[in-house]
Figure 1 (spheres, rainbow, N blue to C red):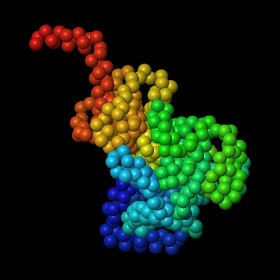
Figure 2 (figure 1 turned 180 degrees about the vertical axis):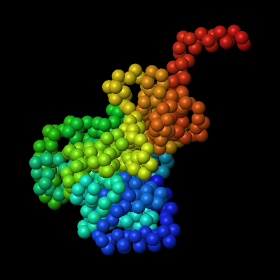
Figure 3 (figure 1 turned 60 degrees about the horizontal axis):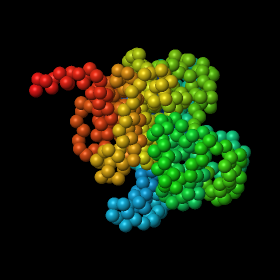
Length: 499
């Protein structure tokens, strides 16, 4: 869960307010009916953000969650995966320390302690997302499945909720592809892989997207052999100029990546599972399915509420309103970009529209994304290909990590930044591959949200030596372009005559 939710949930109501809320809850539940201002189905990233913001404004909120508070991000997504990646990075540093003059060795890895560390991080954050914390805020948390009975009513167990507005924030679940034999062998998804507490011999990863590659590199660094299969190109949603750098690094570490590969069948038992594919046969001990996600819409009673949906998710307009004007849908369940920060952005739009009647709308071109391999890949706005598809006349400004002093001192000189601008210099998008790319992209996300010209990105002072200088050096490319123009050269020539 991101820090905005934790900050909001930290400003709890006074004890008197909490007692009053509890009294209202008891009175309401006596008749098995609640009439809040906002009813939220799903206590993942988006749902918790809406609940915390509304409660902090004194709005009556009911929050329904049938599974774990915190949703996929906390329990089976961002938090455990980044914890695993951090552990694997330390193992890799021990193994590759010789170039720094430190004796390298194969690390001793205690997988039970690795598992304990991951779940310890989850537990530490879970307190911020738990029912007790939100009850203290004045939110009525119901631990049950929510479903629409009609256009105005949601039922959760034997409780009816008739709210002024509803928010569907039920997230998504892993897609399991229809591969012959897959259902006959044990396989992992993001919902089960973090429960492993023993060494993995050979991990067979089906899917070459961000999740597949992040976990593949992590397990390779923790001593496993890893083979990836993808029917298309790995990391196909990102700029290929950037992904080439990351894929080269993964292959150098030993990860085997089969692209444009069809899997014919999967068979085996126990810790011997065989995948037959268009390039041959691979045998491993574990199979990880990372082939995308599907919206969690089953059992919500959408038809009863007049809410349109399809296999991609719930249909919403630019303001996240469904075909039932009383109901919003946010996050993964809408079928758009599947990131925690997108769900939180959606939550802010719902709060502005539902409480303040402001005409806030989603800005899809401004969603940053990061693939947490090493090196990281970060992107915001349009890629080069997307800009050309929209018929922009573009300028591209690049700067390599190899020309950055901090990159050399820290040993991370492989990477580059790539900025896309229109013919007037307005920033359309930026991509970075390299160390700390996920942190460096923040500046370009701000530039995009404010509609800045790339020349504005030369006006700030970067401390030396930092990776942040890479962004400024890329921006100076626009000034170099100006310096090459005949008119500028002519003006400089005239000014020289005056001494």
